[in-house]
Length: 197
Image 1 (cartoon, one colour):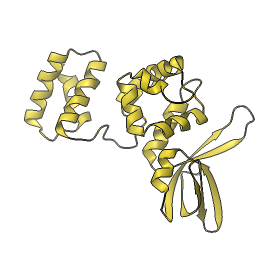
Image 2 (image 1 turned 180 degrees about the vertical axis):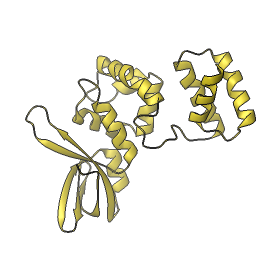
Image 3 (image 1 turned 90 degrees about the vertical axis):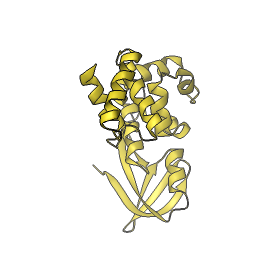
């Protein structure tokens, strides 16, 4: 299976890229996120995911400018009833980070605002993906969230609340952790807090 292709960008439209690698043109379907990242670049490395279309059995290769977007695409297509076309539409409408945040915060309206995603699909996506995203799936980076100290505390608090812990207890645990480890990352805070709560 092809994992990635590096080469010159021979053709680029908002839905498709052709990467020229040693005289062979590889055509890949892409999202608007990937299009924006590849635009104006003479060459690139594009990460590949091949899906089989259930209706006619045709293999379609999708390309992603970042591994993180591909990981989220794989996660979305693992949900029953979610095909590659729907996953691409979701990743064209929201960035991977926006999509993860919408699922984690159970923002049904944000997910429903994506063309072709109805109420039941949005609910199913949240139900099936929320725990996986909290565990770090759908992200290529081992750092689940990045940002300032306040954002890190907010994200850790939110994740722990989703796991069913009381906010007052969470705040005490996080304060104690940050006193000892002021530069702790979100996943480190969550792991340490789970041992204390």
